[in-house]
Every structure is written in structure tokens, then in C-alpha cells.
Length: 146
Image 1 (cartoon, helix red, strand yellow):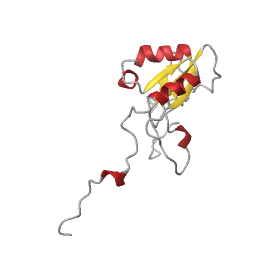
Image 2: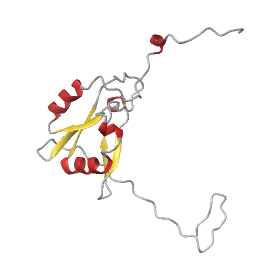
Image 3: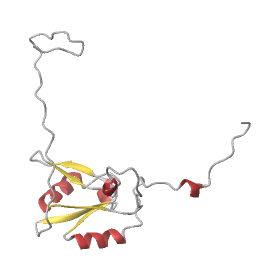
Image 4: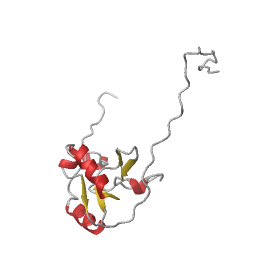
């Protein structure tokens, strides 16, 4: 017997929905010839659905701060994630038209050391979600008539 939030019995036409399973997220992958290292200049990672129902998460540059009370989010930094090459090709084919890919904030290299070097050369790119140093803005005014 199914009941609603007020414990009223629902009619026979009501069918209880089966709980949905959370999509599986890929485990850590070891770097091989069949993998790429994806770099993402964004504080929060992005999860991409794959055709097989799994999810691939590209980690952002704020990943080391996850679960911590305090930390510094470095502007221009990239999060690095190793994924399978065919997953990256699917992501590019499906989402490659989006600005995060076309403006260089998300890219892939064959090796992690190459991705680190490329990320360092792109450290002047900004995603618009960087922390603001309020003291440097100098755009406050004294309240009038207070």
C-alpha cells in the first residue's frame, strides 16, 4: 500500500517508482597510451554522461580544496584528470562546440607532463569564477547621511 506525505492511502493506479541508481563514476585510471590527461580551468569539475550510462568527471582546479574549511583557489590554475581516449573523443564530438573547449579552458594532452606544461603556458586565461581581492578593488564609498 502506498501513501503520500500526509499518510493518505493512494489509489491502485499509483505505481511506486523504483529507486534510481546513481550513475557510476569512473575510478582512477592509470596513464597509458589509450588515455589522455584532461586539464580544466574551472573551480568545480564537470561530469559528462557517456553513451553506456556511466559518467566521466573532469576535475577542476578547486579539487584539492574539496572538503576543507579554508584554502586558496589559484587563478589560472588547471585541474588534471586522466581519462580514456575514446571518452575524450566522445566528449569533444558531443560538447566540443561549447566555449569552455573553444577558448582553451579545457584541453587534453597525451601525457600528464605535457598537460602541466601546456596549462602553465595558459595560466593567463581566466574563467570568470576566480576569487576577487576586495582590498584591491578600491571601489567602495562612504555612506552618505548615515
